[in-house]
Every structure is written in C-alpha cells, then in structure tokens.
Length: 410
Image (cartoon, rainbow, N blue to C red):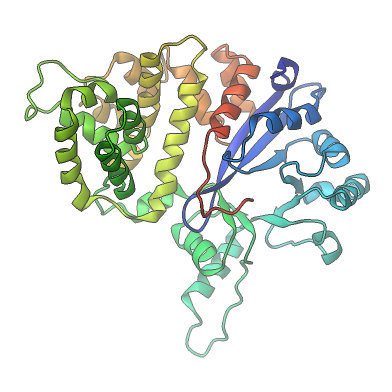
C-alpha cells in the first residue's frame, strides 16, 4: 500500500446485517484529513488490489464532497457502490456528477431520511437507498406490525423492501424491517435493546459455534483451528476459561489463554465439555450480530498490534478485546468478571482501566466502529498510532471476513 493514501485519510466501518442475521457487507466511512489532498481514486485502487472474491461487499461512504466528486467523476465501473448524501444533491454540480456516474455504470446508494425520499427522476440514479428511521417512522412501522385497532383502517407500512435501514433502535423494529418488510440489510444493530429484551434469560454460548468446534475435533483439525473457532464466541471462550481453571479440573497452574487450556485438556475432555454445553446452547438469531460484532472488534484489536509482535501476545490482545464486552452479556461489572480468571494485569488494565500496553489497540478498535472522526483522531494522537497503520489494519481485517453464503451484496 502507498503511505500517502492511507496516511492522509481517516477510515471507519459499520457492518450491514441481513435477514438471516448474517454479515451482508460493510459500510466503509472515508474522511479527508485536514487539507483534503488525499488521492481518493488511489484508495479505490488499493481496495481493488486487496479485495478478493471471498471478501465482504463494501459500501463506500465518503464524508467529504471532494472525495465524492472524485469518485463520481472518475471511479471506474465495477467499483464498490458509493453512498451519496441527499443534502449534497442540492448542489447542481454534485447532481450532474451523479447522473454521469450512473450513465457510466457506477452503483450508487442514496442516503437520507425515510420521511423525505427523492423525486422519481433522482431516485432512478440509485440502485438502492440507505434510509434513516426517525422516531415517527418507527412508531408508524410498529403500529403497522401490530395491526389496526378495532374500527380503524389498516396503517400504512413506511418500510420498503430491498432497502438498507439505519437508526433502527429496537428489536421489534428490526424484526419488522428484516422479517416482515423485506429490508435488504440493517446498518448497525440495536445491541442494547436486543440484550434488554433478553435480560430475563441466562445468556448461553451459540449453538452453531459449539457444533463447529465439535466438528473440528471430530475432524482432528489443528489446535490453531480449535483456538480460532473457540474465539468466535465470547461466552463460550469465557466458560471454557472458567472450566479449565476450576477446582474440578484440578490443574496445578492457572490457564491464562485459550490455547493453553486446549492443550491441557485434550480432545476427549474438550468433546465431553462441549457435549455438556450443547443442550442449553443459544439458537437466538438476534444475538448473532451482537456476538459477531464483538469478534470483529477482537480481530481488529489483534491486527492493530504493531508488526513483529509474537503469536502469544497477539492471542492475548485478541482475548482481551473479546472479553472486554462480557459485562453486556453477563450483566455484571467487567472487573468482577475478569478477576475470576488468572488473566494478566495487562488484560484487566486495558479492558477495565483503559490503560497499559493493550489500551491503544482496544480503544482504537472500538473507535473505528463508526464515523466519529474527532474521537478516532484524538485516540490515535494520544496513543501515538500512525494513521496509515490504523487504516491498513482495518482494511486487512475487513478483507479477511467472509460474508454469509446467503448474504446479498449491499
């Protein structure tokens, strides 16, 4: 990669989730740095070189009109879809560029409020839309989902099929959008409301991850593969660590990593333990984006560790980030949860105190989950992380993700 490109932009991302609650794609936020001299077309070439057929579809979300104009004017056909803000189309020059880009074969996505859709002439320039759901839209959609009251006419559904929606803040609304109305995807996920709606249920590891690990054992795959699968579910990984450090197992020394626990237990013991987890394992699909978002953050935190770091250190940073949101799942203070395990002080300091050698990776990985550019730049400056390294780490993490087989591109 060319440093002048990734060193002069600020990137961020947001997952897009489809009706199967699987990754459908990724919205990539692109901010100009001060001065706005970055070669936006070079970024497209960089992404094209990095991305493979197995990488997730991207929705490019420029955060400056200069970048948008460069892409609309010069991006080649076959580039990832480009988001165009409704407010920017009020500029005649931008609208003319959008028309020319549409004629050239670029895929464009209109972004604006659901309550103020574009005129048909403008709407025809776009393949789909990213629609913001206001409170009034949410109320109307939920009234429609409940059906008309006695004597009342049937409410009109404000949600259109085949579109992407953002600002969906409740589990009921996500169900209406994805399952009832045929939305293409949700940008982001209402994690807080999903977990609140399930607060009376004991959170369990994911059934599909337990099965995946059992299959890996039956196929006699490597310890590396076991560790990778076990790390795909924060609750399963946490329970495994608790079990390997329990008095019942009787190990003489504390187990501070997934890999060491796997080696100490052996195939048969792991298989029996997984068999005990399987009957109560969760099949709740709305929890999948919650869990997978935590895994994305852990992968990114691991990627952000500077080059040359050993495998053991990277695994510890991954586990640190994976466990850093267990308080959301378990409903207990994070410090209390982590103190149950013989983890290093570095893990506790980063996850709870936001201090120590791992804090930079965890804090920046969390800040990259969106487009609050001021916070991200401040963290990079505080932790002395170069922008080029952060952006490269994000793109490398994203390119390695495999979208669901049933996911449709954004």
